[in-house]
Length: 64
Image (cartoon, rainbow, N blue to C red; front, side, top):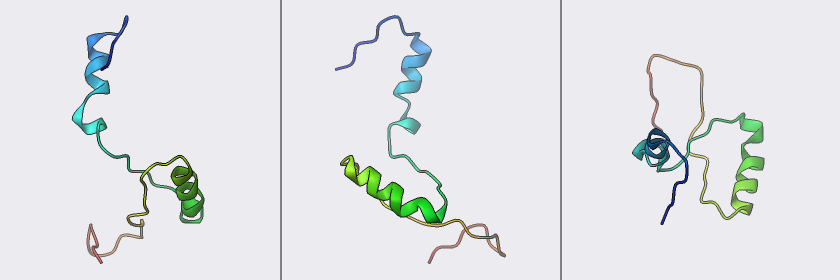
């Protein structure tokens, strides 16, 4: 149910690219995470904190 007017086909392709059709992942400072989460939930958006960035150790990815 989308109508494009005077939009190049390449832009249409970007708007419906599978890589941009899913969820959005954002990195924010830890001290701002709860405030952002509350704002997003206030807009009725499904959101959650799913991890944290830490200093690199002997591994590239830590799952705990």
